[in-house]
Image (cartoon, rainbow, N blue to C red):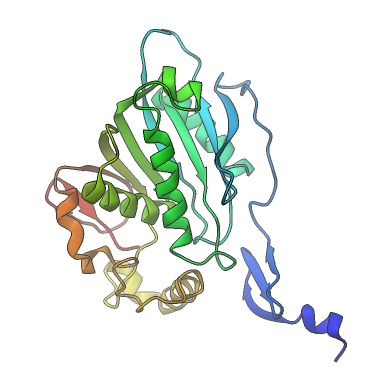
Length: 272
């Protein structure tokens, strides 16, 4: 076979999201466009991009609402995008537009983290990058960090973690790390999980009737985390994680219509 043809031999097809070829090339089919920063004409929200860690190429997109009281600091949302750890970014239209609207409606400052993606960078890369981003945020606690928007606009006594799908999974695990390690003066007020990417060997609710979805999500999970122990890996199934106690005083919010969740202490957990 011609070497060029071999390079393009398809080995994993996760359409309509992405494809992987034999020689390792990843063809992402969704969320690849780059939307520039701007002042959003509909909401007045302003955005800009910052480098968090040049050593690993870690960046983030910051959002600030139109200020009506320049002497009042606003709650900070640290947001982690979805995409099964493998695709999407803060810079694509879906997440850029979503964060513009969210920041406007909630009147918060936001940091949307561009963590490295699998399979080129398998887990725990996304977790480590996200923790690095949180440590960067915490470097602004005394008002002398590298980014003025966080120094002057963000209330770091009132910080929320949030994300959808893989980003919900990341938010949960960042909460666990925060509960164990803290972050020099940064105070976590709550965690917002939007259809978090969790699983388990014992499906719950309607998911037990969708074997194809279970198989598909497990394939994606094993691709993102090659060293996983399986569907009951604590990274994938929070109910199997003994570190829940570190979140005992943390509030949770879920955007989970028509889903089943179990209350745990002051918060809740859902497998989806």
